[in-house]
Amino acid sequence: MAEASHIEYFIQGVTKGGKKFRPSDWSERLAGVMSCYGPGAQGPNARLQYSRYVRPLLLGDLKCVVLDSRLRDIEPMAFDFVMNFAKDNDLVVTEACELPDGHGATRAR
Image (cartoon, rainbow, N blue to C red; front, side):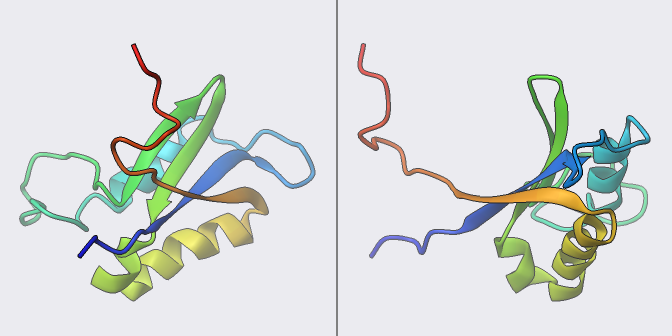
C-alpha cells in the first residue's frame, strides 16, 4: 500500500499586498526555531540542522519556508505556530504536493 501523500505549504517572503517581508533572514530564523521537530533532533546541545518538516528555500530571489503537513501529526502546536506566523504577517501561502519518484513529469534522458 502506498504511503499517503502529504501537503507542503510554501510560505513566501512577500505580503499579500506585494511588499517584501523583513528582516531579510526571516526564513532561516523561523526554520531554525522549528529545527527541534523531526527525525534526528536530539536535545538542546544537538548540532543545528533544519527539520525536514520546516525548511528555508530560495526561489529566485524570493525567500520562502516550506512547511510539511506531516508536522501536524507530530506536533500540532508547532504546525499551528508556523501557519499563524504566516497569517499574522499577511504572507502569501501556496499549497503544493510532492510528486512521487517516476512520475510522468520527470524529464527523460
